[in-house]
Image 1 (tube, rainbow, N blue to C red):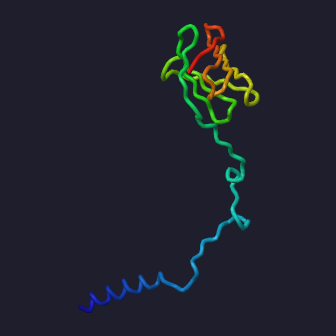
Image 2 (tube, rainbow, N blue to C red; image 1 turned 90 degrees about the vertical axis):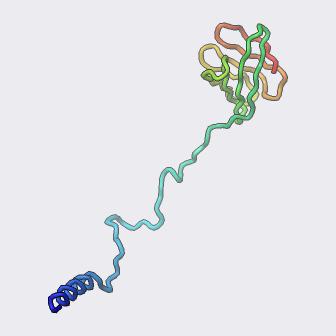
Image 3 (cartoon, rainbow, N blue to C red; image 1 turned 135 degrees about the vertical axis):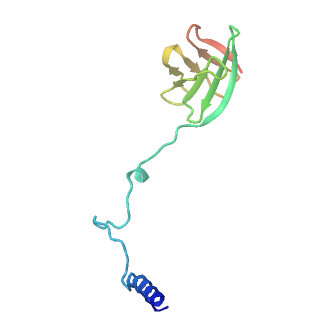
Length: 129
C-alpha cells in the first residue's frame, strides 16, 4: 500500500512539475511588420471573360460552325465540330473583326442574325444563326 502511494505521488509530482504560470506565447524570429502582406492579394487580378452567348451558324456552303461569344465583346471561340477544340479569335477593340490563328476570322455581333465567318479551307462567307 505504501509503495502504491509513493508511485501515485511521484506521478502527480511529475504532472504538476510541467505546469507553471508562465506565458507560453510563440515568438517569431523575424521582425514584426504589423499587418502581414501578400503580393498575390495586392496584385490586380483579372479573370478571363465568361461566355456571353453560344450560337450555331449555318453558312452559305451548308457548313455548320459553333461560336461562343465572350463577355469582353472582342473575343470569341470558333469550333467547326460540335464538342471540338475551339480556336480563339480576338479583335483589337469591340466591334472590329476578330482574327485568329490558321485562317480563322469572325465579323459581326452575338445579337446579329448573320455573321461573316472564315475557317481553314473555306473562304469568308455569310452564316445565319
